[in-house]
Picture 1 (cartoon, rainbow, N blue to C red):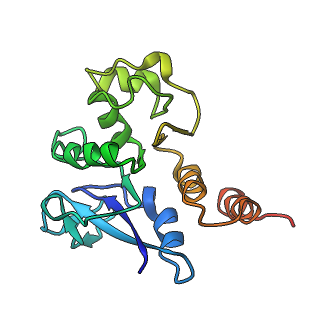
Picture 2 (cartoon, rainbow, N blue to C red):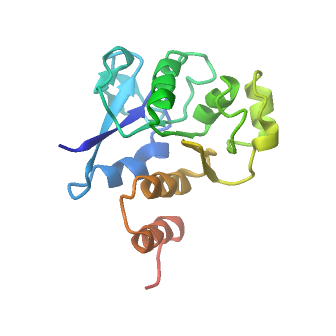
Length: 192
């Protein structure tokens, strides 16, 4: 049986931010399967207009999963995703990694999850402005993606870097193959 990776999607989610990760994790030769998670079972529409019926709602989590991935989008700033905190707390209690990109990082910052660990996001100024309860500026790292203490964080321009870090964390590819993959999607070619 394949190991499930949960991808949290919400109304207006940024569909491209998880596309690189999901397409690699869902390949038949991997040991992983991507499953979508949402607040409820109601179909969710992405920024690009894709309607997705979630595999799980927050009230019906699977007993075990390998990682929780939080995709950015327009609903984070509206406070519509607060119930995901229950799942994040489950992850922390069970040592399940949490990966977040763009405004999902802003949410983590506002809720205090990033106050004491190295992290990134759209920018430290952005987090200070849009995450009023954020107290982790001294741990902010000016990088596309940061992995620390069970959290992977990425800014909104780092979909490929985010994917590379998640794929590395889950050991989906050998390091040299992953680097070739990254070069292919980042610059359009790679040299052997």
